[in-house]
Length: 281
Image 1 (cartoon, rainbow, N blue to C red):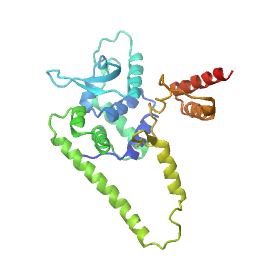
Image 2: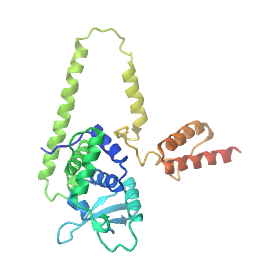
Image 3: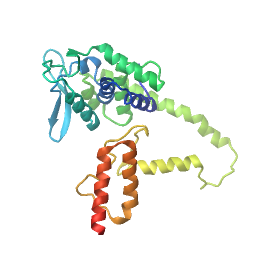
């Protein structure tokens, strides 16, 4: 069975990678974690790998000698990192590989070292680049992504490997169930000391967190350690309308974006507040 990281460990790894002073190390871990690419596929990317199809950006992954490419959806944050990498590419460099160091293609050991160092800083022990591929598949299937879609994303030509991930998902559910079952059973044996409508501090905290994460048809399961590129998506929509009574909330959201260094998100709320101030005057 493939080894993978749980959500908390994956979030710690990404957080540690983002603190690495080496831009290649940061980019390499983001690519592996967000796309599920093989190490060799990442090293085979070319400078024209980022392509736009419609309004979205994709990463073109060449496959084999016949160049039967597959396209991987490109997360906006990853698109920004790739743009910055290309922006700092030495001028006049004729080498076709996307990842080069001193005009020579980056080798596999650089990726291995980047993942190893990030895992050490996160206190996770040994983590390999291929584990991030397994991790993406496990995260996706645990959140309802179909086996066919995952197979297409990872470049599997058969569903045999997907059945392995399905077994991992089943095992994850079982592990989580047995981890809490003893605590649940203890509730049945405990004497009744609280009224039925009483709510403890931890339950109240959990309820507030769930309300904060609720969406129109579900809720967000993103680990709290990870930023979200879409957390201000509604405010940037042309149909978004706000009024003066929401100014305190908008100010808190603007201050939160500033504290996190999210310049684009901060500008969104600054624009909304400026518009409100203009309407009020």
